[in-house]
Structures are given as C-alpha cells and as structure tokens.
Length: 441
Image (cartoon, rainbow, N blue to C red; front, top):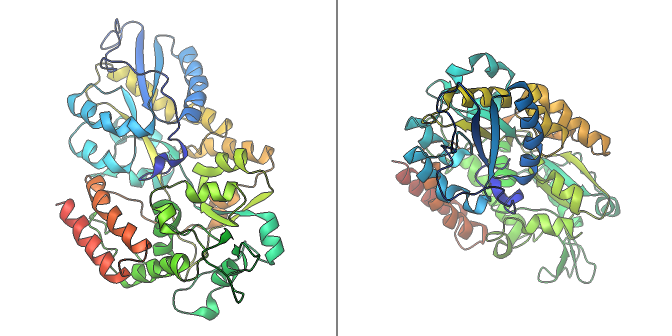
C-alpha cells in the first residue's frame, strides 16, 4: 500500500466498528488467556478487511478460544486518533502502521518486538518490507502488505495510435539522444484540435489528452525518478539528502514535463488532488499512468477501455523503484499478549496472508502468499509481472525515520511551489532539505 500517500487508494473505506471507549480491552475478555479472548485489529482498507474476515474465520477454527474483531477506520481519520491511543496504551491489540509514524512508535517502546517474538517467521517475509520496518536490528511489526514495484499502466488504443511502445521507454535529463520517453509523451498529448504536443500550433491551454502523470507524487513519481537517476532522498541515518545533483536533475526533468513540455497535468490540478491523474487515466484522458499495485483494482474496476501494464520508465541508472509496505503492529501494552502474538503469527503465515492475495485485494508481504495474488489477476487476464522482478530489482529506500511525518509536513508546501514552476528547482530542494532536517532534530 502507498505509504506517505498510502490512503489515496483507500480513503473511501467505511468504518465497520468504531467505539467510543478504548478498543484495547473488550468487555469480558480475560487479560492473559485461560478462556475465550477477543483480539482487536485496526486497519483502514475495506477491501483487505473483507479478506481478513475470511482469514480470521479460519484462524478461529484453529484457535477456538480466540476471536478477532476488526476495527476499520477511514484513512482520513486514521492517524488523527492513533498516536493518542498508542501513547496512552489504549490502542487495539494489533493495528496497521505506515512509515509516517512507525519510527516514533518503535523508539518509544509501544510496539511488540516481532523480530524477537516471531523470529522463525521473519525469513518468510518480503525482505524490503522487513528492512523498512526494522530499527535497532529488530523488526517491529508483521509486514502485512507491500506494493511491489511501480509499473506503467497504459491505454492500448492511445499508444497504438501514436505508434509508441510502452515497454521500452527511457528518460534522460541531459542526453536527448538517449531519451525515448519525452518524444513519446509528446506524441501522446493532444489539444482540442487534435494536435499533438510535438506539432506546430499545439495549444497547452486546451489539452484533452495527457501523455503522462508527472506530479508531486512520492511513491509513483519523484522517488522513482530520483532513484533512476542514481540519486538518494535520505541517508542511512534518516537525514534528508535530496538536494544533490542527481535529484535536482530528476526534479528539473519532471517540472519540465509539466510546465515546459505540457505532457502532464498542471500542478494546480495535482498538488491538491492526489487522485487527479488516476481519474484522468480512468476517463480516457491520459495515455500513460505510472503507479503501483495499490491502483490495480481501481484501474480494473474503473477503466472502460483496453489497458495494459508495462515496466516503469527507465532512467540513466535503470528502473529503480521505491517499494513501500504496511505493517500489522502489536500493542506492547495489550493485556492479551499471548493471543495477540498468535494473531500476528497468523498474519505472518502463508495461510493467514493468503486470503488477502486470493481476493486480489492487495499484495501480501508474506512471500509464499504472493502467488495467490498473481494467480487472481492472471485469471482475470491481467499480467502483473512488472510489479515483481520482471520490472527490475533495483530499489530506492522508502521513507524512514521516527519524525518523517514532521519532515513531510514542511517538505510538501515547498515541493508544491517547485512543481508549479514558481520556485526554481535547485534552491527549492535546498530549502526543503534544510527545513526537513530541522524538523527531525
């Protein structure tokens, strides 16, 4: 699932169970076992919740004394209450966490040490997810979902009409002869008179078809462009280092796609609406839409045209993707620790995680459970190979650090101005980097 902007695909989730009192201590539940026990699980994705219902029904068959109650909270409200509940120890026994708050929770001792308690299950989890949610040499939750690699959705009729092969597109910030992507994006962008962006008289104020979804989109766009140009966003110590030459070239290229080449929607549309480009693609107004598995079901359900999936764009350093994941964390203050650990062990098992994959709801972060996900989409005629190793193996580290949320809050408005073309890229990146590092001190 998308991490910093994870909720874009699931913000419409409806709460199944929201109670006014603490969910950490259901009435009549023995605190340490010895009788029927109810373990609560908080998450934000309705589709995954439906799969979890089936998964935990099987879990209870195998563990008759443990019932699992789901608490589905819309993402728009999820992180408003969660930090308060975690701080007070009144949070659910198990709860989803993304990168924004993970580090702070782990460092404050609020999470169960999964690396210690479930050490035998760790080898079966996706390595990138384990790395993302490990601190001080231990894993602080069970990776529940992972996005896999970023890939390129495309409108088959549009690329065919333009004579573009979406499977072999490369961008280059300094060598036009090595750049096959920008010429293709120009051919795929049209105005109301049918002129493409590479033809005389093209009107950028009357675009009816965009070529690509360049935007201030951490996961699908700018992290991947920085990585594909050999740059970094954060150092291993979690400090921000994106004011580097490779990153500046990548951002300059992206800003040029929007404001100079006019092959992508304006920042005025995308800065305030993370779903704008996705919706343009679904409405048949965009040819290439770079995104992840978190938008696969949206595309499958919403696109009324023939579409396909190609590898993500390649840069000078190849195809370098960010891989984000979500963990199911255990509440270290839960009075039902033994039962909570059983639930976490189930989520870390191929059988427990397999229900999510089998429903096609999301890509499980349990390696052996991923086949069910790919089989689900294969049965529907969707080739998902480019979300996996067929789309490349190189990655750029996902967002990390106990105060990443604070940093993101000061980065975003500066990036908005950069993408809008009102702040020069180099000075803007330096300003954002300085503000971000000050925010995490």
